[in-house]
Structure formats: C-alpha cells, structure tokens
View (cartoon, each protein chain N blue to C red):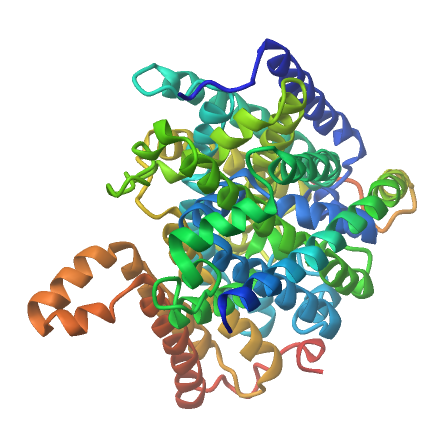
Length: 55
Length: 525
C-alpha cells in the first residue's frame, strides 16, 4: 500500500475503533452502576452461594 | 520550557478525587463475607461492570506511557498494536476459545487449572513463574507514573528536585492502593475500576479532542508532519524502517497469549456471573482494548508534532539530528497534555490518569497475591484449600510485600532504554509457556504434565531478551555482523514461543501421564 492508502486505512480504523469505544462507554455508565447495586445485594443476601468466613 | 497549565486548583481536584475513590474502596469492604467475595467478587459481576473493570484494569497509566512513547517514536505505524488487540479480544469473545471453559471450571486463579488438568507440581511451577514475571513486569509502573506526574504538572524542569517530590507522591498513591486492595479485595477493585472507567473515558476523550482541535495541531497537520519527517515508515508497521514483520508477529503472539493467561486481565473471565457474561465481556470490551493503546499512541503522535514545531524543545527530544536521549520520549506526552489542556480540565484529566495508575495497581496486586496464596502457599502446605481466613490473610500479607517491593524497585530503579521491550519480555517469560500448556491441556488429550513443565521452563529463555545488547555484541564478535542483525528482543521472543510448543509436544509424547490420572471431564469435554 502507498502512503495515502495507509493514511486512509488508519483514519478508518480510528473512526471505527474509537467510535465503538465511546459508544460502549455511554452504555456502560448507567448499566455498570446498576450492576454494582445488584452485586451488593447479591453479596449481602443470606442465602447467597457463599458461606461465612471459615476458620 | 517545561511549565504547564497545572495549578493549585488542579491539585485540589486530584486530591479530592483520589481520596474519595480510596474511601469508597474501603467502604465496600462491608460487603465482603468470605474468600470468594474477596478474591473474585463472589462471581457476581454483571456484563457492564465486568467490561468496565476489564478495561479499567488494562488501561493503566503505564500503558498510556509506553504506548505514547511508541507513538512518539514510530508514528501511526504503532496503531497496528491496538488493531491486533481489538481483533484478538473480539475473536476470543465470539468463539469462547479457552475463556468459556475457564469460567465453567469456577477457578480462582489460572494456575489452579494446571492442577486440575495435570498435577500440583505444575500448578506450583506456573504460580512461581507467573508471580516472578508479573511482579518484575509491574516493577516499572511507579517510575512511569512518576514521570507522567512530573511532566504533566510542570514539576519536570531539569535540575530541580522534582523526582524526589514525585517519588513521595507515588509512594502515597501506592499506600492508598494497598489500603483499599488489602481491605476490600475484588469487590473494591470492581467498584473503583468502574469509577475510574467513567473518569478515564471522559479524560481520554477530552485529551483527544484537545489534540485535534488545538490551533497549532489538528489531523491534517499531524499527518503531514509525520509524512515529511518519516515518509511511509510512519504509517506502515512492516516497513524496514518501522517495526518490521518479526515485531508484528511477536505482538500477535504476545497479545493472544496474554489475553488467555495474563492473570490480572483474564481474572475478569473468572469473576463474571456465568460463561455467557465472560464471552460478552471479551467481545464488547474489545473496543476498550483498542482505545487503551490507540488514544495514548495518538497523544504520542501529536506530541511529536508539537515538539517538532517548538524549536526550543527539539534538542531535548533529539529532533534536531542529535540522538534522542534515553527516557526523554516518555516525557513528551505528559508535557503535551500539560500544555494544551486548560487549568481545571487538566486537574480532572490528571486525576483520571492517576486513577488509571491506581486501577492497574489494585488489580495486579490482587492477581499476583491471589496466586501466591492459592497456587504456591496452599499446595506447599499440603492443603487442598486454605480456609477463607487463611486465604485472605496470606493474600493481604503478599499484597503488602509486593507493595514494599514496588516502592524499592519501582521508584529507585532506573528506567531501561526501551520500556516496552522490558514489558514484552517479562510478559513472554510467563505467557509463552503457560498459554501453550493452557491451550494444549484444554484441547489435546495426550497433553501431559511433563510437557506442561517443559513448556513453562522453556518460557524462561525469554529472559535473554532483557540482555539483547550483550547478546548482539557476543554474536557480532563470534559470528559476524550479519548474524548479529538477526538478534533482537522480538526474534528471541518468537523463538521462545516456538520452543515452548516444541517442548510441550515432545514432553507430552515422550512422557505421557499415567492412565489413572484422567483429567477432569469438564476440561476436555
């Protein structure tokens, strides 16, 4: 590939890659917060699949 | 020459943010009730939280530093590394190759797999090599963090006592990370990783926006400057004046092997709710692995253009025809960020990047410490499993021990000339042999414990890559300059990958395990 083709290639890769990342970030911010609340609830549930600290 | 827009207000933002994060990390300790909660967050993390933590772990300040260094030195050609990371991570998520079975087995650490598949001896060996390589790999993190802080905050004026000040700050950061990792374990890691993911995404986007909208920079100027300076080698990674084919192939092997068994990152495969969440985490998190390399590389690429158009900086960074002094390229990106991002926003960005520093440290500390307690101490004590209290106690003591090592080694050890070579080589020591034994153990019925031990020992030869200058000189003296040209860190690493596969196959065929040592059916099913 010549130089111009490489420049266009990297431009396209950056638009797709970084665009996907920032879209992902927008989705993760609310859903991640929800997951944290679920995690705390599950960890504190008495019937969770975890035993209390063993000696 | 090195003054930046960082003011006292920015320090206030940074301190408030970091203290707040550490307090939250310690507060979530109340949700930890047993070793499963402490080490793998009770395996209850949902997809979004797993992805945030997956990306937060990989997006360390040291990653930003070495990616920006390579961007500064090699230009757009370095973008092949994030492209490989994107394709490999997405491919693993789509196929479930290795990672699905790891989750199905409900492991706590990767070496645990080797005991289930082979025997306890293989598990202990894997644990020792993993921790040795991992802690050495981590040894340079504080120094890189210190360099960033010094030059982004304007404390990096040569001749000042900047390094001492920065070392004190780095020490405080490590102490804070130790405190909430020791107290909160994986739950703290998951929660603080999430917070840091949010701040980092804002910070990365902001830094990138500033690079492309600054009046003296912008896409067209960046591309044309590189084109004039380096020609097609600035864009083509396999060009002879760029990385070359051997380096590119090494990166593909390293990325693939590390994604399967580099403990801090693959641990995310073990903490999810189920196997489907593990696959989704890898697949959907892949753009994060692209961004973690691509954005800092773009900062480094932009820093080159910035330095090039500021004559007073040309000599310091070796762009006036003199040789680029070792370590100076690591200072270009933080200097650029400090100069183009305005006060206030700079504080937020530095806080986000310091968060990246802490995020990587907590995950790495917990990953290596878990391996020491679960895969070295427990088997050597002859116990099938440590009690929860023992597990947590040994893990905490190890976290503190590694923290002490980091303070001594990381802060006072001089940076080598090529940080990425050091990172790649120390990583290869472990992942070359372990990935071979992991894949072979999972998909090849005739794989034996002898083959696994041989493969892991074969990986130790990668240490030769740390002494590549001496090796090159030796080969030049004994076999001539043409032979010496073939000696490089990447060629040594590639040979090691081949050697590990060869040793694994030979050991397995020559010394098969006894027929009564049938592996767990879940592994080979």
